[in-house]
Structure formats: structure tokens, C-alpha cells
Length: 95
Image 1 (cartoon, rainbow, N blue to C red):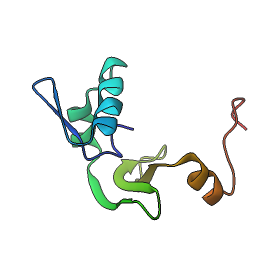
Image 2 (cartoon, rainbow, N blue to C red):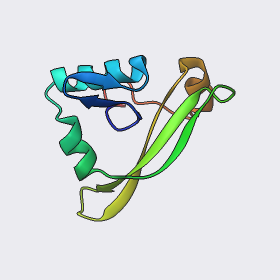
Image 3 (tube, rainbow, N blue to C red):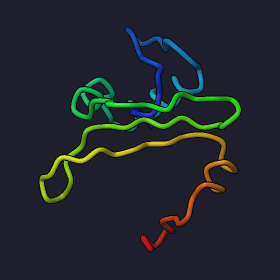
């Protein structure tokens, strides 16, 4: 949630959409240093939020478990839209 947002925290203030800012504040309160995370996982592309599509996606450089370079996608949006696009999910038991 800290990567799939355009909001920023500056000197304790939210700059940008208040809902996105709330996600950043939650991440920080949970122990995530958003600025460090964003520098470690740079955004390489994005699909901006569109009211017709009701979601936003960002793509970030990552390293997989084998040490290889990969790009990971993070998506947020209307639950009904995201569920309708999903072809599987990870349940509470990990399966």
C-alpha cells in the first residue's frame, strides 16, 4: 500500500489524496519507512487511477528469492472490480 500511491508525507503532513495519505500513515505506524521503501523498490511504470476502471497499479523493481531481478505489480481499487479481474486468491491458510 505504500508503493501503490501517489501521496507523500512531508514533515508530518499528507500531500495528495487524503485516502492514499491514510495508507501511508498506516504503513509508517506499522513500522514501514516509506521513503526508504520507495528508494529500495523504485517505480518503473504505473497505470494511473481511472474512475471508469476503478483501480491503480504500480510496477516496481524487486529481487526474487533466487536473487534475480524481477518487476512486481501492486494494485489497489474497488474490491468488486479487483475480485472480478482475479483468477485466484491466497486464502488465510496460505493456499
